[in-house]
Amino acid sequence: MSLLNKAFDACQYFVVKNIYGDHNKSTKVQGAISKLISTMPNNFIGLNIGAGQTRVHSSIKNLELEPGLNIDYVGSVLSIPCEDNKFDVVLAQEVLEHVDAPVAAIDEINRVLKVGGYFYLQLPFIIGYHPCPNDYWRFTHEGIRELLPKDKFDIIDSDITVGPAVGFYRILIEFLALCFSLGISSLYKPTKLVFAVLFFPIKFLDPLLLRSKQANRIAGGYYVIGKKK
Image (cartoon, rainbow, N blue to C red; front, side):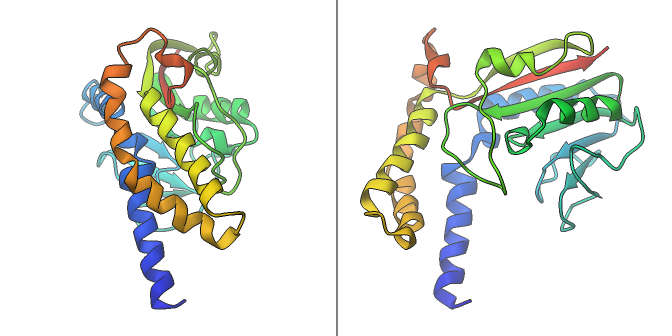
């Protein structure tokens, strides 16, 4: 790989993590997870599914498909390599849209959760197709709640993660990248990167737009927290 390609990949990674796809850093997400962790006992153990290299808390283990830095378990959410009733809390942030059987995945999460344990589920609504390696689903504020079976979970909280400004921003960037790359595949990612940076200020409109009762129409995504029965 050339130095130019390495530089572009590094730039793209930074922009995606910190500007374009920073849902996990939103105030609502950070607040909900911090509040949830604060309710845990001192000796709690948690699991973060699809965590990448991010360590949310020293007591929360990371599960990924491939080994790497800060990865404690290697495996799929459809077959978690852990015993039953092990964890006090399980996090799944922007993961289950990439799973072809999300209901089966939630059953598996339920298996490894202790009775009385908490499941934090976060999913996108209005964002473009983003395979990793596949991309199957989108969920409304009603749909994400329906994913947690009423006979297995009590829903204790749910909310928007990122609002209409982020939803519009994500689709706008995709549209502009398609238009200005002129159908040339090699231009798509560089064009998208430029527009992602240029139009980033649109996202600052979210605090205002979230006051509207219509914010759910094009919100970027949602979270729901369930307590295992």
